[in-house]
Length: 385
Image (tube, rainbow, N blue to C red; front, side, top):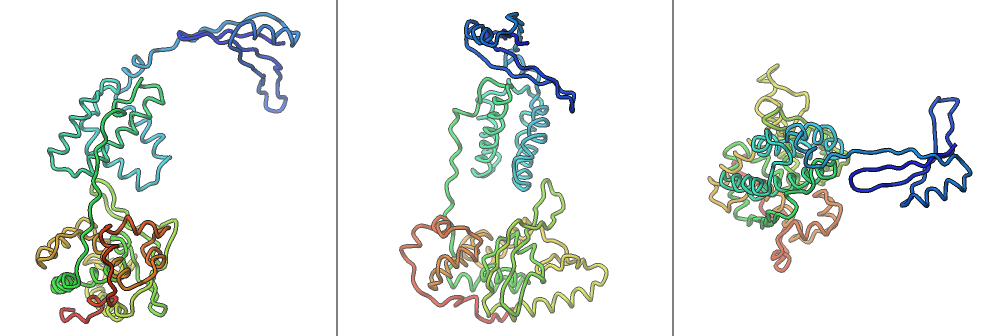
């Protein structure tokens, strides 16, 4: 038995024919076929061809205007439904935590109690202006802007809004920061001060290997092969959100990094000193992770704390104002200047393509590469060790 179905809503009327109904004896579920048509005549003609019952079944679908639907949804309610219930499963864990921090610190305090449809383009602009007034970087403001665009675009797709209020706003442009590369003399000054402050080994290790800070802080002694002069980079420090405790997470992939021979005896000495400290502290020393660069009691160092100490050492050394990540770029340039093949440098840094190096390093550098002795500065013995 087949039937023509008339489906009506406030915008248009559609026609369908339901036919070939049957019952699955195994599951007890009822199945049927259906075909849609733009006009009643076409649906009737198809029904006649089936030679079935020509009766009609009318269905009136009352649709609620999107704006009326949106009035019932608070911003906080939408976040619970979309961000934690749907979006969290579509992005990587670390990305989720970064976006969650943006929500909790910058967005929810501003829009949390508002209804979703009431948030205007002007209010979003005011939020971004407020963040600029509070001294946040263009990068942070741009991240807030981008995430709000994603959020409201999803609200439109889910039917809560008619349009995305962020869509036609000018995106906050974040200029690419030109990396600051230390000269040989500046590297020497930095390490001299760092060793005098008891921090030298970590910075020399960074300039000699190019690891990211989160990779250095997660590095265990078992990841270093002294015989083959290699490091297996397979872990990273999860920085946490809202001051939560850091922890070490395994990566989905890993890379092997070569260690320059000058660094090996210094690492051995660093390990011996660490063992002495462990013996002195006894049970107070946490050696579960066996970290190469732990805090004073063997635990994970907070990246923010490391960066703060680094900034103080940079000031004391009276060198160019750099951040910790600039040491990674300095390492890359030392290799390029030494004539090391670019594909090898890319592998050392963990890049999939050599092309990344051209974006990673300042453009003006490529026009002025000169051959110098690799590790001419960082390979020197340091009197302050």
